[in-house]
Image (cartoon, rainbow, N blue to C red; front, side):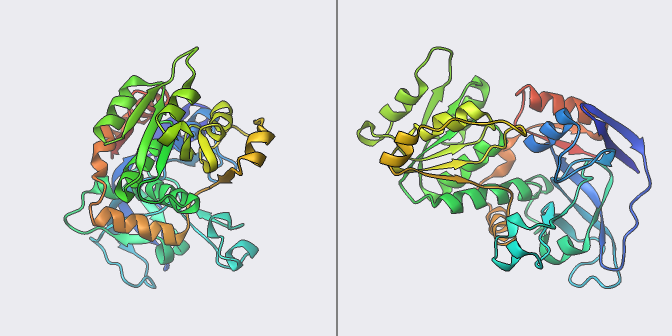
Length: 342
């Protein structure tokens, strides 16, 4: 089969590789759609990921497809089923699984290889996070399962309620998924972004207010003016992975506000926190990583019930041999999600 192999920083090569062999507990899927991801773009730039991928390796983790082969011991799935899976599953044996903090599992099984004609689904993911796609849901919509699961996790952890005022910093794929989920809840959402094209997309998706970031502009004051009585937002969600934005997000909320630090920064980066604001304004700050099986199921339900119209986030469709071009476009901010069609 054709498969994209990551060798190092910005070094992805499309090669002829063997179709994966599966065990009696695994499933082989013919990939119909693979989506680009901000994490994949960072991994592409950095040449790997300490938790998910070590080079050289097949690459990509957001996909949907049709089962080609089923292991003898697999129950509930058969050849020809339309399926989608999250990119990991917990071990259910370690300390963190024991206290039901599954996203912190010490032995997460990760799955990569979506930028290829076929992908092997490991046993633990087959048992936990593999789902059938109803006939009225497109492969493109289904392929949003993994990033949507992470967003659902974040929204639940920061406990956003109907009618609350929320500011999202960053309107890349994750920021826009947050927007869609929050609007579905009934929150009032302001988005902050320096890319005017992405702000226009956020407007089309129903944000209540937009703030364009410019040099010399007091963005924090402008955001507070948009809040009730000018006191600040109920919730701030950081979706850029930029330390300065982490710091600014804490200044965007009112007393008693909550801050979700979602975007992953580069290893070793540090932030400075205003202790007076955090202490005297009683600010809650949370970091959230990845997803859990419960959040994957909730994301799956949102998809199959067609609550979010996710295909609106796909801005381009390219063949597998254009994977480097697709990732370069995402890095440059020239698209939201690009569907790779093997």
